[in-house]
Length: 293
Image (cartoon, rainbow, N blue to C red; front, side):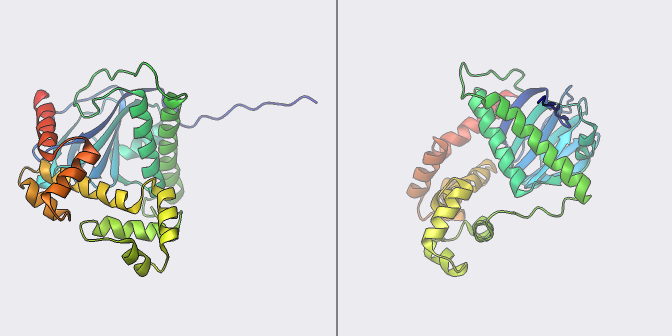
């Protein structure tokens, strides 16, 4: 019997990648208008960013992306006295279906956020740091990286773009960004995201969501790759970094604002997550941004 092999229809193809960045901007950071011969995805991980481009003038908020077209002039500035965390990925992709995303901020679904997280992990396993240096014209590949990591970076980026385009075509809008995964974990995650500066315990979560510790611990870690405590502390440190970048509060004030009981505990947790003390972290951020002025 002769089998007839079929070709794949390639709807979206990312041909090359220019850069993959995670920036932590200060509240006063801004850029001059610029354009590149590749697309540029901008995602707000925390805070907000003012965008001035040919397709969009306005504010990009927490959880939203915009995809600048190739050769589209654009600039950014930190909006409303905020100090955002921003993911920027430059890539070559000749797909007309991406055009609407240059003029319409889009809220990522939970699935799409996970894909973006995988893209960052893949990128950081393939490319050498720094990942937070603006205007890096030539990101260097590592001498060696996990088998297939470069291809997974391409595949995950293509999957993210396909998901966005499909959702746009099928729904006509981006209103439905609900999580199709574990409902209890989804509700617990939403609660933690809204209350992470408060005291959160496993007992309180089990009571609030009518479940048990075994279920919470097992399923939460399966969903997020972190324990509840690790997830809460990661949110605390992310917010602490943003507050420090505002340059309005002392480390003691920031520790209290994000719910740490003491400066000592805050500093220890901050260093465990970032590798630096709060003071050293700010010195590094300011130094890198100053180099690009």
